[in-house]
Image 1: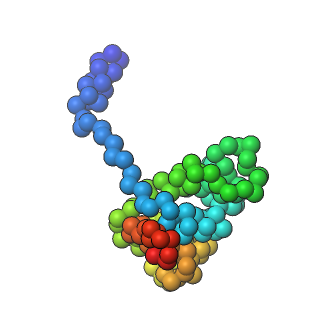
Image 2: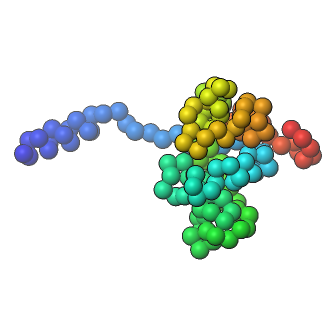
Image 3: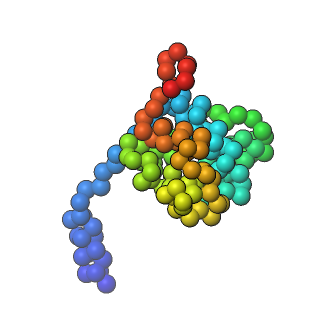
Amino acid sequence: MRAIAGVALLLVGCGPELTTTPLEVGDLGFFTARVEPHLEARCGSAGCHGRPDRPFAVYAPGQHRRDAGRTWLDEPLDRDEVEENALRVSAFGIGRDPFETLIVQKPLSPEEGGLWHGGGDVFAGRNDEGCRALTAWLLGRTLPVDGGAP
């Protein structure tokens, strides 16, 4: 038995070195103004992704919150919650073709190139305002310094 444990340790030690790469997160101003409202309205309910036990959990007012004591309060997300939502969305592929990412494919109707989604079609098509905002953010859009339309 000791021989098996020793071989297992030897094999683990001979594997490639594990490294981490920080996630790239897009412009937080654009995310907050253009993407976050769609996450909150369309994805953040307790029946969808507004629960901590979901694989893709998002924070939303009156739903899932970092501070469990604020769960049912209908107040805006704090900066840390917005940043966490942005980080979770960015994990799907900042800089990649958005239409090849699950964060766009799952909510998009299959007729428009999307995939089956347990919550149904969230984006009716590629021109849906939420889909356009999400894909623009994934492609690196930012808010202009003067606050005008991007």
